[in-house]
Length: 160
Image (cartoon, rainbow, N blue to C red; front, side, top):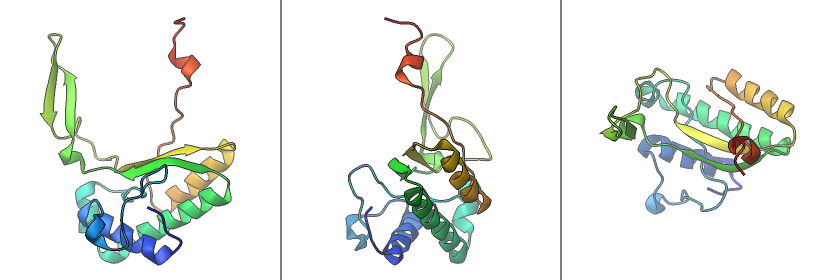
């Protein structure tokens, strides 16, 4: 989503938090194609607990995400992709069935207290500064896991 107005961004985030995905009929809030997608729903809690929080807690999370975006931009870090994920209950899981095939089931892969509700694919020239920004974001109540992508040469495992 693209906006120069923080109030518009917060309104869009409220819509995302309420219904999961903004629709074109939602007025100012419409998905943007391209590398910068809406931020994930902030949830340092299980999905069901997040849904029951009062609106002021949702707004606090949206403000935290707004600050996170400003901090990234100020540090020269780039968001290559980001987006909210559907609830884990809507997942489809595939796993080995033990006899050479795979079992496909509806629902999350594992039962877990922590759930991934969104992601950011970031590019940076200053990992230490990025870690600083992520640490500040976490201090505001977000659960964050930073992982590097495997470089192509690391993925080859010696293949030529």
